[in-house]
Length: 309
Image (cartoon, rainbow, N blue to C red; front, top):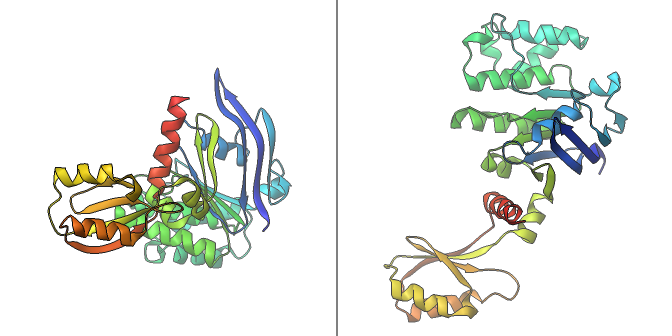
């Protein structure tokens, strides 16, 4: 698989603060790559260096195999940052036409029509951007980023401040951009559910250092805690919980109002052993299933470990 964005040993200091410390990662062609981290971790600084808005103190970055300082490289990148770069007194079409002229887009009218359709704003094309909701502005910002038909799209918090319905719409647009338009997408986000739903690869940065990086499914298997979930209809008593804690072989580690959670994976107890034990304790079992570790659990684990260092 080809590398769309290559970042190697990039460091950056702003004032007295070391914002990035030897950051290394690759975004592969066709990825929807999630770049995660708490506020101040270095996400936006990384993005601004990729875009050539800041210069790294050391290290190398190239996009599509080319130096980011070249104008020809920048023409292959689309981006949407905060603020969104839209002009409130101009219509959607006028905003896009302005940027199309900057990028010297051929047959700009046809391209503008296409990107507006892509983001679901064709019916609001002649309305001023100042009348748009936050979600609509974010979609228009995506259209602006796509107007010159770039190969790589870089987005900083694309659903920040958007209501749940708007978030769903933007996620669908991003999936279409990657799968139908065949673009590579790098997005920073605080929304772990969003990243979990649409990203195939991720990196977690904290205090300027990459703490987790790779295929999301592989990281789940390697770092997450998958579990056997037993849903019950009977009441869960304190004595039953105490008994389960003493049965080390079963791998019991948590419970909620109607669910027991047991360790899963190599060396874990068989599901039949868990069911037999619970049935022997008079527990009425409704169903049994498996749950994969969530990105939130992995994220929390990594940041807690970093705090103890």
